[in-house]
Image (cartoon, rainbow, N blue to C red; front, side, top):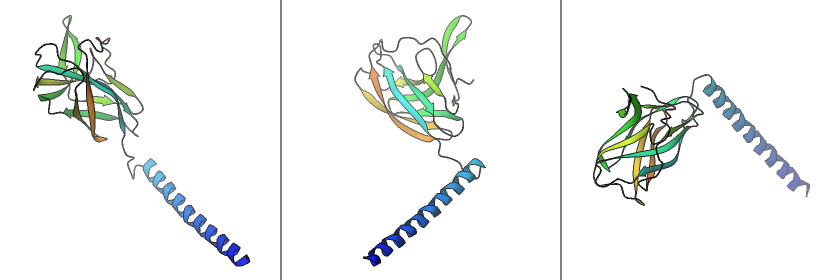
Amino acid sequence: MQTIRLTTLLTMVGLLAIGGCQAAAQSMDHDKMEKGGMHAEQKVMVQQPWARASAGMAKAGAAFMTLMNHGMSDDRLLSASANVSERVELHTHLMDNGVMRMREVPHIDLPKGKMVSLQPGGLHIMFMKLNKPFQEGDSFPLTLRFEKAGTVEIQVVVKGVSAGGMGGGHMQGHSM
């Protein structure tokens, strides 16, 4: 009986020693990260990606979503790609001599710990020369390429023609 207890005790001591070594290794890795010796994995969460159905035979469309940077540093959306159009561009709306116009932007800044909304009337992903009009209820894959987080594959759902309205031109995270 005592032999079994001693064996159990020695097994437990061994497991604790192994666990202590693992904790020490994790602590050393955390210290390296904080000193810049290692880089924590960048994480960007994409919420509610959607596109508006095309009006008639429109040759352009747009996708909207909210991006949340959970990474350890600022990041940027550098590009997007999809097989639904000839070109995919990052866009914003801006006022030009009293007229609201869309313009391509080179990237979209994602400050760490912040949400950036891609919405009607603001930042968005533009699809030029659609292969076919967007139809309500359809969906399509979209690849987002971030400077630090790498590529993220998402599925964009097509909503009705009147979905989303026109946002207030809010350009959070915009960089020209």
